[in-house]
Image (tube, rainbow, N blue to C red):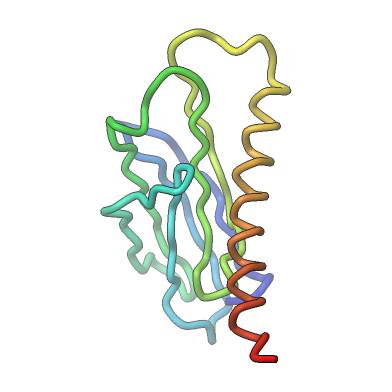
Length: 128
């Protein structure tokens, strides 16, 4: 996929985050991965929608991913070097003092993803 790929949230209903993924017409089927911290979410549904290059995405929110504090779900494209397409947060238990904590948590999740991708790139490209 390319940078023309977009993922727009449509709703959060019945414990599922839903969105519409739009990809270029010539792109292959999307390879979506959703992570909460280092844990991959199973049973993510990606279905071709009406119209060329449109897919519906449903991310189930597993009960074990809900706990006190902020949980950040990162939706990324494995086919495009793990590019982050979207993300969402679930806040449960005691309220955080302000939204700055949420931003820091999201930045940490994205930084961890970038570190893993950079390390993998170094391993794959550095035979010397």
